[in-house]
Length: 242
Length: 222
Image (tube, rainbow over all chains, first blue to last red; front, side, top):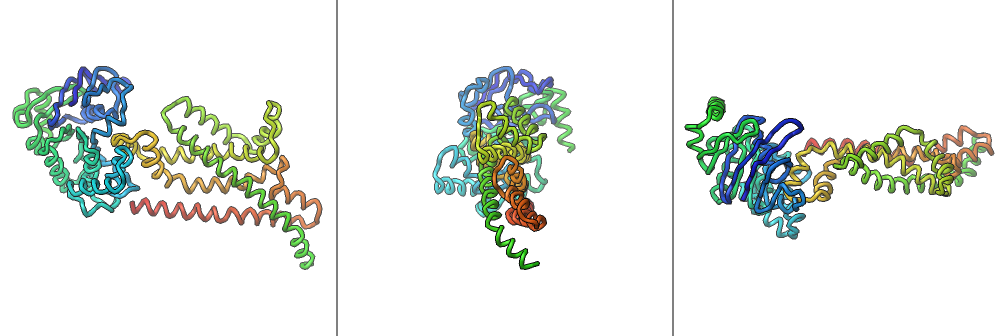
């Protein structure tokens, strides 16, 4: 479904992705962790080309992303992306946030889209918030609307960029529950997160990044309990004591 | 004395209303054109092309850095030498539009830049194309920032339209000049001119203020 081949990216002189090789088959739940500045966000932002990269090849759903002539809007329509800061559209209700892309990208008619939108909001447990504006919702609720917004496009892949990092602790659970449910339904997911519980429960694989490199890959339990590399061990001890 | 004043006033008022009408026509047409042009320029100014953005920036700086009376002289007296001969009215509209679109361009560009980058990213990530991102997500939010100063620009433009009297457009200010040389009540004449400008500008000033207030309250609610 996703295949990185020697992908390299620079921000000016800063080498943020170094020779990334990674394959994510359909249906896999992949957790990406690592210290801040390690390139993990950049990595998943490359998958829907929110970031360009300069060297290497990246195939997503059969499409070559290193080829700059591909139809980006078509590709992005099939990939859900959930941001750390939610980025809901503040001038629209929750329902309008969810139906905007189905109406304008999938060319669904309004009734159909609203029906779909309400179903998606119900799926994230927010049926009663359809007409609320983002500012009237808590952080956890906003992030669940953002997930519903992604799901409304029936994506083949869902990408999560630190989806719980901006949330108050008591709201993290409600967002993770939705993500766990998605994972159990077989969605292909790449999740940048430090939520070890989530990783242990549903991730098929954890990758650890540091300084733009993919340092270690493993099954979640093995990775967290017995990391192979010193850097990963240090990192895990830090998030444990945190 | 007062009766004399009043009768004089009644005598001259029809001319002034005609002048006012011309001011409204010149300003109104320029307002529509400069808004359209200003939005297009403002959107391109924030676009990805450096060359386009810088060229527009230069245009804006030139328009903002030169007096309007010079601009209108160039349009009316110099452009004919290059083959573009315009009557006074179209020349006035062209000059007002050129100047005001530059100001509106900056207002629009500022409004677009004030929308967080994440909004573009969220819209792009959901598969909307550039035009849809702008139309459905960015501009509706930018309008909050844009509207109050935009209406403010309209007020400035209506007042600047008095300058087009210098090329012979018989709008309100020119009617004032024409009248003041014929009758002795100079104070009355230009008070009347001022009052008539105020009559069209004041509602816009109020509109701008109330928009500012309403939109800032709304952003608190949202």
